Length: 137
Image (cartoon, rainbow, N blue to C red; front, side, top):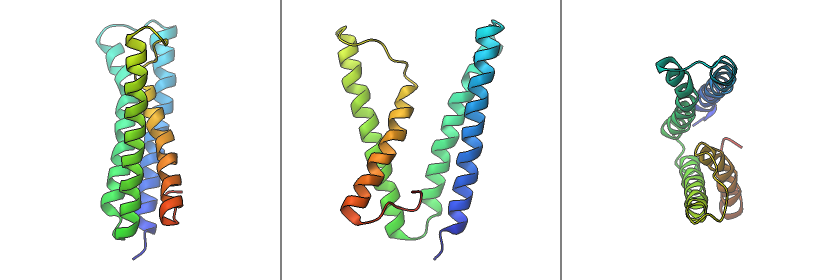
């Protein structure tokens, strides 16, 4: 069974989410940082990039649901588990180091960046252990 249609939908969803993410960060920086927007509207503007990240996770989840090939689905699930474990482990270790004053504070949204790096780690692991990068690489 072809993965072309699920992959196309995944790429559409992830691209839309990333565009909203990038544009909303720029808009928030301008409105809140430069124009000093405050109050409830500032909160609403600041939440949009986080919702775009939720859209990225939605795109990944839907791709896993829509893939009918069990091997490819297993690779995707494995990749996401590795990415999540990687991000959470680094965040926990850094958090403990930070709580003891040994490293500087890092904004929490960087955990998503760690997760993204973790997807590469997961894809590499899939390639080394199962001979395939999966469908998104």
